[in-house]
Image (tube, rainbow, N blue to C red; front, side):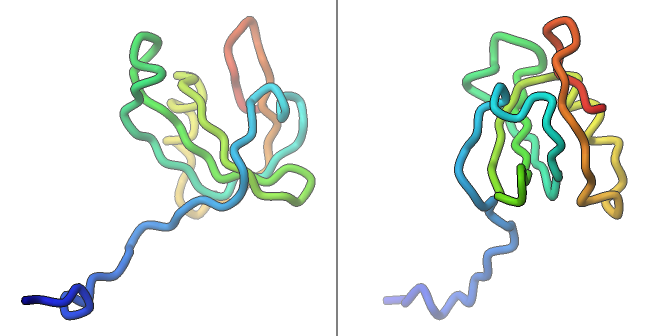
Length: 101
């Protein structure tokens, strides 16, 4: 029988650090965005693109993970070049739409 260690499988993706934080807790505060990933969402399926944006952020120096189905944030963050991370920003609510400022 094979032993898992024989396969020499290495994890290639990085996990995000920190506790989940609600968008309402970070609105209008300066944050640092380190990484992001976009996946299909069960929660946001009925709204927008059906995608979920996960971001590794820091608020006041403490790392958190945030989840959102915001199509505006999803569209914009994909346009940031890889060497643009990390970056500082503030997320604002503009007529019930989140956007980076």
